[in-house]
Amino acid sequence: MSSDEPPPKHLGRPRGRGAPATAATAAAAAATTGGYDVEETWRQTARALVVPLERALTLPALRAAFARLTAVAARQKLTIAEDPLFGLRGDPENDPPARWGYEAVLPIRGAARREGDVTVLRIDGGMHLAATTPRGLDDLKRLYGYLLGAHFPAKHQQLARPYILHRLADGQARAPDEATTVAVYAPAVLSIAPVPVPADEPEA
Image 1 (cartoon, one colour):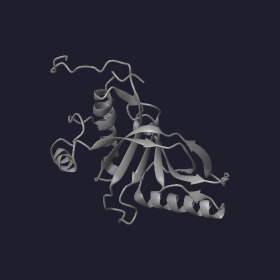
Image 2 (cartoon, one colour):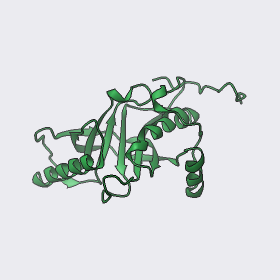
Image 3 (cartoon, helix red, strand yellow):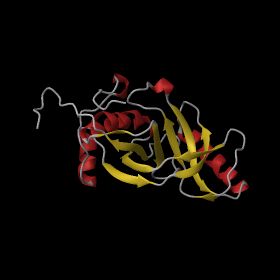
Image 4 (cartoon, helix red, strand yellow):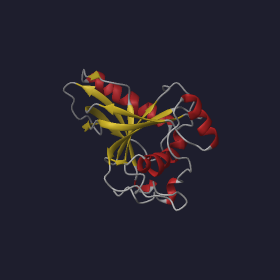
C-alpha cells in the first residue's frame, strides 16, 4: 500500500489533521472538526478464539458473539487473556466496504481447539495507533478515514497489515440503539515513502 495515495471517496475523509493533545482539546476538536484523540500503543501477539460476524455490525450481534466465544472458552477450560474484541479484515484505505469482513475475537491462553465455526487464530501484536469514538459503530468509517487518510500519512506511517482491532471501551451494558464508545487499534509501521504536501501548504 502506498501512503502517498489519497483514500477513496467512500471513507469521507475529514479535514482535521493531527491528534488533539488532551482530553479537553480532543472533545473540542471532535465538536468542531471531527478530529480524534490518537496515541501510540503496543499490543502483545496472542492466540484467540474467533468467529465471523454478519456484515451488518450491531451491538446485539457483537454481544451474542462475545457470549458464544466466552462459553467455548469455559467448555475448553481456557484462560481469557483480555476483554473481547472485534476485528476488521480489510484495508479501509483501499478496499470498499463491500469487501470488509468483521469477526469477534477473544484472546485466550491454553490448549484451544476449533469448535464449529469458532476457530483458533494468531492475532499479531506490535505497535498500533489507538483512537476512540464516543459515537458508536456508525462512526467507524469516519474514524478509519481520519486515521488512514490524515493521521497516518502525516506521521510518516502506514497500515502494517489489513487487520484492525476494536473494543467496546465502555462495556456492553448499553441499549441496542444507544451509542457506545469504541476504541480502534490500527497496526502501524513507519513508511519510507514521502508524505505528499497539499497544494495549499508550502514544503518544509
